[in-house]
Image: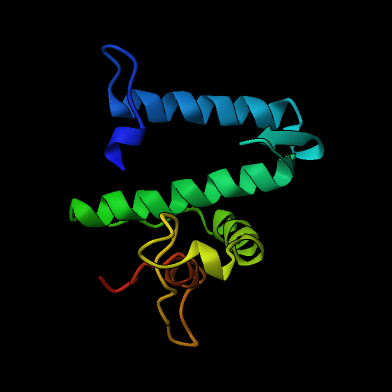
Length: 128
């Protein structure tokens, strides 16, 4: 929902992404991964929050690249932790058109890359 996110006056979307990236880098430097973090009234391990943010960046970067006709290949060492987190987090009630979170999983071939597996699990067709 584009209306759910608003930029500060005069801020460009690319600036907001850079700002969020800097905040994540600072959280890593502050060792947030070893701490519990409150996310939307729920306590989560910091490493889980970071993995969730990583998954968001990887999948939505692919969305943007695909929508604009660009190639996107994330760092290989980022894909598996993001996928492993989603595997443990995405319950069936978080899937489908009415959930607001994930589409149904898209099957990928057995020999698919780690990134294609992540995309398929996140409800994207890697071949789109």
